[in-house]
Length: 319
Image (cartoon, rainbow, N blue to C red; front, side, top):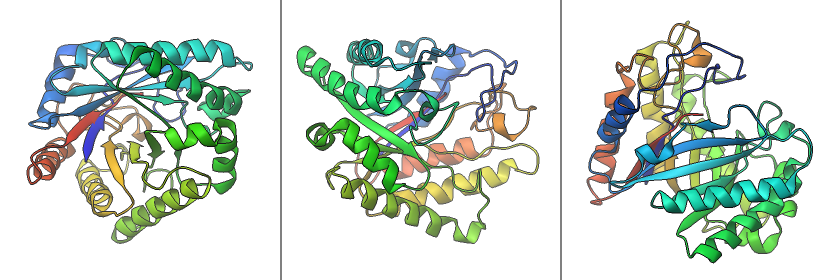
């Protein structure tokens, strides 16, 4: 399994994206933390976001700083136009492919959580048409460059058959069958609390449902599933020690699943602001880069996971 994480920061909380003054990113400290998490894994995803039509245009600002030595960029091309703009978005995703190729390879996710309304992409007019059409643009750009860049789409939470039918129709059967991955953002026990003795079973049920629904609409059963975001925040009544337990439980449940999960990416590396409530506390590190108990636990989980097979991949992500 390949691991990954979002390392960026935005001046907003990480749920509703409401403005919030946050400590700036320290590229040196970020890179050191990424290397520690990666360990000996030959590949590790660094998840990055660009927002078409939105003021939060890039996070982190310079993804290339974190590429190399097995670290691959997972670039999310978010569609957040105020009016339908499929042609503009096509240029946007083509540039994303070119940049990922120039950084040494990785993947491009076309759109972000189209099944979720604003502030996510599902609230943008024409989102299905733009994402559906421009999956084709990413494949075309990969072929033009001869680039080894994976292409995929994602959704959040329990799989909705109606949503996936709509997205599959927009993409078309030929390109749907060519997808290199289908992504799932899942945050068990975050937005809806789950007794922790039922957490593993809940994760397994969600993964099996996702595989079943996506296969029913035409995604090949062999297409890898990537967990494109997962995490558990601290703050208020959410203790740092509990974050460690939840992340370990969820990670082990995903590892033990038999649905073809090939990548597991955390949201994210560092708190936006550790004193601003749980919506800004998803990090494995506090906002001053000091580690929470979950940081060494995740690091050690990655090392245990890759050692038996002699390889694997990992990544950390910011939105």
